[in-house]
Length: 68
Image 1 (cartoon, one colour):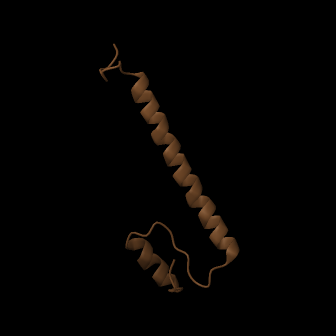
Image 2 (cartoon, helix red, strand yellow):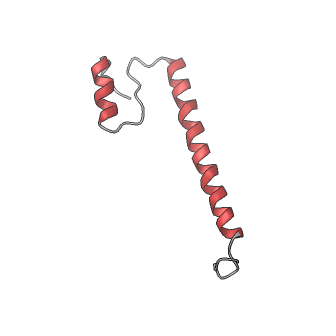
């Protein structure tokens, strides 16, 4: 979140590595949409990581050696 609200400021922030951009004054609707967007990405990533961990455990024996 930033107080810089010019169009050029948005691009400069994104170019600097920010994942998203929300300027002040904060509108509740825009904040809600942004939070929903990033929440879904975080949960999707967590679910993918968990699935990969489960798959790696089911493809190895008790010593962690690959099953053939």
